[in-house]
Length: 454
Image 1 (cartoon, one colour):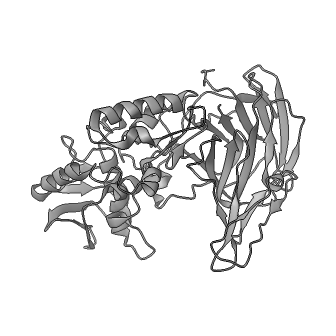
Image 2 (cartoon, helix red, strand yellow):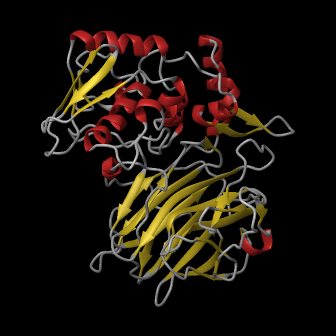
Image 3 (tube, one colour):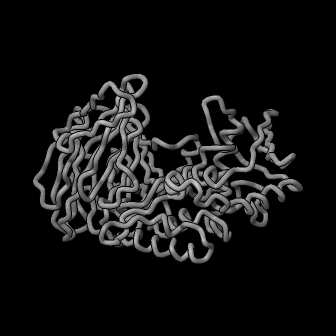
């Protein structure tokens, strides 16, 4: 087994045929379905329908009931670090109400006060599920499927609050990213009885605890089928990332090094994405992309940019600059124009010309992800880059001096290069190059392993 370099491994093992559907709560486009099935290091294997660890170390277990006749088992490998790890599970139930899993396996439906925008803190005892290396077995229950779900892990207690929405329902207030005394992270998921299971790593907002995923599909003939995996960051990634970002700040003078948050002992505990940092520092990176985008606009004033939307209905989308606007036309004759994005627009991919609403055309929904990805990865000025994203392999991503250095370095520090580092990191070549998103999906999951580092 390949060494993951993690202090602790948490494996969630589904011991029966389970129908789950997992998906990210933040993705905007069917492009998310670019998924590759790959092999990877196995946390274990099945012997007579019993899951056996490959690690060869003492384990403690937690039983999770997933509903009638559905079970999973949490296996924690004891690698010698006894620090506390807490788990939290949040999501929306089938009626879109907020639910949080309690230690006794029931959904907790938070109540809210009568005031809008006044957060009400949730009791830690109600929502915290301790995960200890030496814990005895603990039985919990997942009563029903959830959407927009997250499984959170923290070294310590996370604080969650709720506020009342306009419809009087509860909305989750997530822990502050700028709180630097606790290290934490999450994976995103959604489950439905009909379509299966989707789950992904996300570093779109920040980098925290090293997490990894491995997912095996159910097969009645062969329960040891090759898993999909997104192995996440190396255990020392956060320290290395902080050093490399600080080095980049010295080179270009921008605030890359300030993305790193440190605790009272000056140890890095979290690295914010540029988008998260800009929310608190609106002027940061304000002119970072200006010259690059000017060059892109100049190039495609005299050349045509062709975008492949992976849709036969839209056909190839032809784009060119006129009157300082990028004007795109699809095979059906639909025309949309896009102005020059700001740095905030580029890093976030959801504002300015990259805004997608329920009224946006299919053309806009196809162009926005691919155009924003092309800028973040600095692929729009490469030789023979007038066809996006087709024919541009990952080895050519981030090769420009002006690029999303956060995303570039995160991918360098991922064990297998997979895990969302910006919102449209699932954009990939239609010629077969694999997605870098770390999105895993199977219709009938058998084993889902979550690797938790220190």
